[in-house]
Image (cartoon, rainbow, N blue to C red):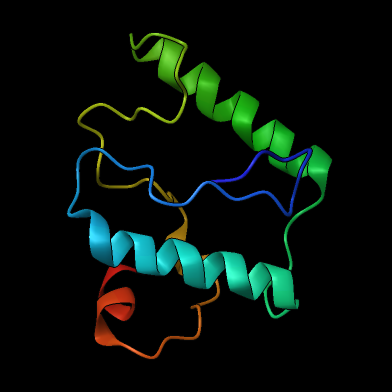
Length: 99
């Protein structure tokens, strides 16, 4: 997780509903890929639009507006169009299985 306005600030290890350690590995790999330039982020405006869209969907579904990072019981479909996301480089099977 990272705030769109600060694309080099990453919050690693924030999870609630999953086994955390394989997820931490994926988060670190993603952060490193962004920092070394092998993964390109959308523009700040696009990321902010996505945050607003997700917040609107969350509120319309009856969830409280804050905190946005708390998906409650929503653990499937966090990346709704995950087929379009580029797979991160991995050295272990755990991240490959999660991505």
